[in-house]
Length: 203
Ligand code: ADP
Ligand code: 5GP
Image 1 (cartoon, rainbow, N blue to C red):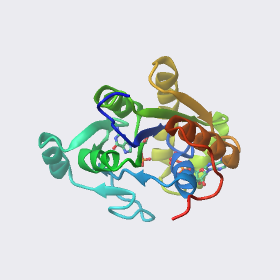
Image 2: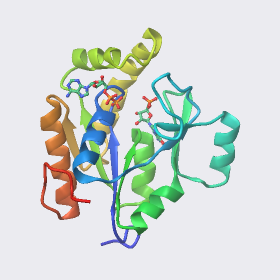
Image 3: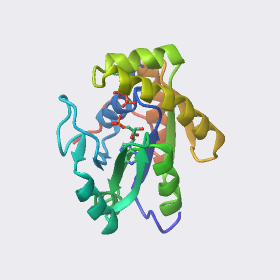
Image 4: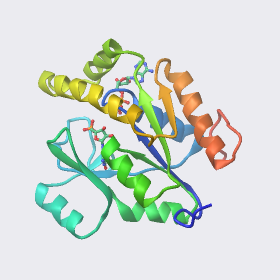
């Protein structure tokens, strides 16, 4: 085992917007436990989102200060518009405690994490098809039509990038949710050397 990650598991989950990352990660946490890494972003908060829970919503000035202070494990400008970054300290603290820590980040961020922590485990979630991805983006009811179109266009690019670079350890197609959650949990459990369980771990 490499010395950068003495215990615990750093799990990166990537995939186009609307593919079902958040849904899968929450369902996986119900079964396997683990901690979700809350990113900082300059993107505006939508009405359903909670500051400090979904993201830390910060100004560009605050983000720049954090970035210059070396507070991010990785950061990127996503869709060329807003900055997103993973606070380094909570990730390191979780790994020191032997926990599972889960990052929902894009391909640019995953590349930086692979460099900083080579033993991270990385999964890319794929949609079953383009029409279904568009339907899910709309069903979230979070973005206006412009943002949906932009996210949809970006999805093609992100999928191409992810499949061309040898960065991800596994690809999971989120067709049937239960099946995709099963597959993701099995991949993570196998990586941690545990048996898969469909029931939550006892307290
Ligand atoms: P992401 O975090 O990747 O942007 P979300 O988890 O927010 O995506 O999911 C986008 C939408 O798709 C949500 O409305 C969610 O309920 C729905 N969804 C997720 N997985 C599935 C699935 N397998 N089948 C149908 N709908 C799904
Ligand atoms: P959204 O705006 O839909 O919440 O997220 C848009 C994209 O930003 C998603 O692909 C998500 O994975 C990515 N993202 C969220 N947080 C981070 C982060 O901290 N770093 C990077 N690089 N990408 C992030």
